[in-house]
Image: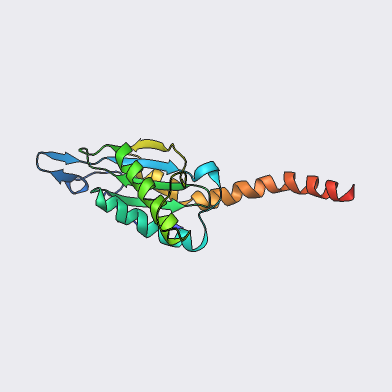
Length: 170
């Protein structure tokens, strides 16, 4: 499932001053490619959870004065192209998004009144990479992630099926 994104203003890898955001004494463009997974990489992000989680991520990013330009939620991981102001640490934004979304999932989808100790949805770590002038490449990579995962799953299938058939014959 793709997350809703903001349109790109740059044309053919040419940046204009409109592409940069402003603070009082700073012009900035800090984009990060972020990937994180559910605990034990369980395939738990599907169905109605997947549909509602995108909205939750956007809302939580706005709470930290950030926004998601591109994103994709797979069954076992999440990709985001996230804009973060230079005054905020990326780790605090990712920690906030993962923590609050875990509480949201526990309350709305697992029907828990509160997020009890030990009820962790996301794995501890995450991947982060800065996105420089290759924003469009990262954007395409995130958008094509589901097709790539399906292609890889099809490559793995022939190896699994013969073993399953061999076990049935014995």
